[in-house]
Amino acid sequence: MILFNKIVIIGTGLIGGSLGLALKKQHLAGCVIGLSRQRKNSRRAKKVGAIDAIGSSLEVVADADLVILATPIDTIIDLAGRISNKLKKGCIVIDVGSSKERIVSKLSALIPNFLGCHPLAGSEKSGITNLQDGIFKGSICIITPTAKTNPYALNKVKLLWNKLGAKIVILSAKKHDQALAFTSHLPHALAFSLISAIPERFLKISSGSLRDTTRISSSDANLWSEIFLSNRANLLTALSIFQIKLTALKLALESGNKKPLVSILVSANKKREKLK
Image 1: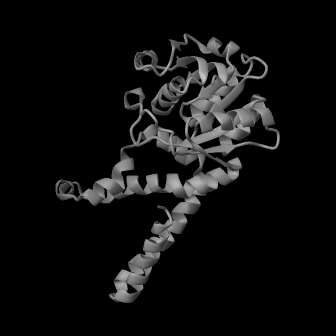
Image 2 (image 1 turned 90 degrees about the horizontal axis):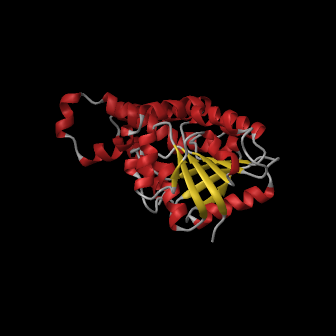
Image 3 (image 1 turned 135 degrees about the vertical axis):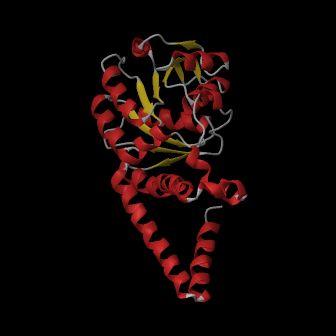
């Protein structure tokens, strides 16, 4: 079932490349064109079957039915200004950025059929070499429409993600950023901080729990610095709440009394069960 005759993916990294592969495998596009700042990424994407052809410039969006912006946040905003006057009437544009308020505010003003999207998929690895087949199956994709969103465009994008196997959650950009500050951005901030706090001489005798807890600290530093800054206020709130919880545990430990310490850990156990 072809949903779009021509799809252009700008940014053929892990998510962009995986999207292209999924679109082609599900036969949702007549043609998928890839465009990357580094042409070697586009060549790799074509070689592995994630795209049909490589775009030579942004002019490739001129006759696209769907444009997917799969780059870092600052680049998404920059690209929007550069392609907005090149798009044909009715072209739908989506992004896959990890924060939404800044992107949605800027792009909704420039592009009539823009929809913010955030597929909660991927890993600490990045780049087309880490492309994952079936990465969106069983995942959540958050879509952040506004009061001005075209209902036709929204339904088309919802159908697209459904066909890729994702469960759709509709949130405002503001609610998205408040939630993701706790469920994604805070865990990344803690993982970076945790590995930084451990003396290097102890790393060689670490357990699997340390590797599990700090896995996401291998994430791209430039990408995550942009994410942190784009959602700074919400992340600062999340960090403050975490500091309160950590202080409570520290005080319980200082007291030497097992009872309050057990109470804190049991409460955490129960909340963790809700995550399964």
